[in-house]
Length: 347
Image 1: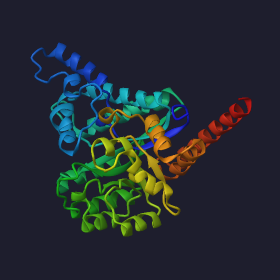
Image 2: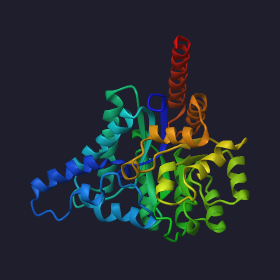
Image 3: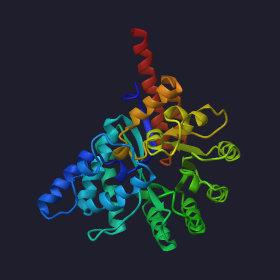
């Protein structure tokens, strides 16, 4: 049922969602064009079935490999289109994809963003099953000027499909939150949603950092692993949506005790809270599409059909895409529920 029911994901990194097969195809094309290419085959860098990348091995996959492979407009176009097709094939009806604007010798940050937005627009126009929007991510390592440039791009392309901004990056890296506060406030004032990677590891979960992040008035928080009971109460009381990524957290050893001990169970069982949204994070690395994440929630926390559908309905209230998209998701869920009710009566 998880592979056919309407689903939505709000925390999915573009570069981390590219399949190994797609990267391999791009690598073959580049090697044909450039026989002396020094990059090894992605299928060697990312062996088939390998998903246990931790905080030390995960980020270098991007900085030393994927970003080095994807350095032209055609490779960005091909990989983005592939990611969109993969999510649609998995039954996703609403997707918020996120990416950090970057440059190469062949494109500017703005060209990078417009290329991705063009892919999204083309995919949205080509079918009615899935709608996609873009979130621009700011990295913890960015300077004040870099943060400002990204927020300016987000505001500039707000009417073209950018719906929010995100704070991401290696959580082991120290952060000067004051660099982000004014720019994120500007983004919110412009009508953009704000989501923050939050308490991924203990090193990024000090009381001072988490308090400063909450003071930015985020709409959603990602991961939310290492939080005190008091902080959890505040997040729930403020009805802030939480983006929870089961496979990523377990495989990367960000949480202890396996799937059954994942913080999803704690958030799901709470009475008063904001939306709880199951997300994929980096499906290309951790090899678990959204349908499998739903299956894991069902297996380890006892969610049945109605609970999964109810979770989707509640999550639709936390999207950044607006009321029209919320209504579309609710209609899709209602139609699926009706279809299943009819099927149940015939069995």
